[in-house]
Image (cartoon, rainbow, N blue to C red; front, side):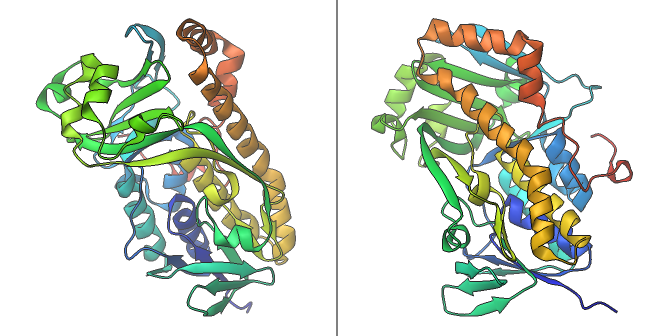
Length: 386
């Protein structure tokens, strides 16, 4: 009988927990290291499209992750005069589902799927790096040998950096403050506030996203050079002057939120020896397609599928990257392109987004990731739509 294989995972975010659940469900012993004292996530809310929902189904996290979530029906983009310049709709009976969800709910659902399958999650365990032969090194000096090590430890990944995998780390010209605010009764009942709305004003943006009956996810985006707009707590007067028609939102924010600049990370390779990288550690991207988490989860699930059928770990990692990286690279490119008009004059920006959402070829490029069927999902794992 073959010995049970073991994987050590750095990072308990979307990618790391998906991989943990997928490997444990395939009979591997799994240990996840999380530097924080508990499982938690920044960013407040997240869009999960059909591809990500299929990953939830594949690992048994769908019902818990989507319970109480807000089903997407329409998204609008509005120009500086508050005119709608683009609108995307998801028919109730259409082929592509989309939910906006409180991030913590997703993390909790994935963690439950992982531990339910036998994975161990260790909090307060800081990772310092990894060695190619399959060794995870902790900040306290402890070393854990494994058949496979996974670095799912975020943008600043010690695992990735210890292996010299970085090709490029590019900071984009903008970033966001992201947070949740209470949803009012008027917002629960109003027709307009059942939609996702992206408001523009100069180079500032505000993304309004219901994520449950009780909460709205706000993202306040601005250029990195716009230091006044990045302030925490937010400058209520500044944001009210920017969006006077949204003045009812800003007093609810208080001291919530965290400013994060956007970055794009590309690696020379996603793995070295018996060590793989996934999620933001391997392919952080602009948020314009809402697929950072989706790609991380798909790659974590696929990693378990590929390696479960390979005795040769490095060979399996090479095949996994050949199979999965092209779609992730495509997603990074299109997401970056969709952010370019942020620095354009308002009329030109409005023309671009109107054209992009009406052109069938451009729409196919934008939706290619959202409509992708992840490796590891099969129709028998589908659940009834809620």
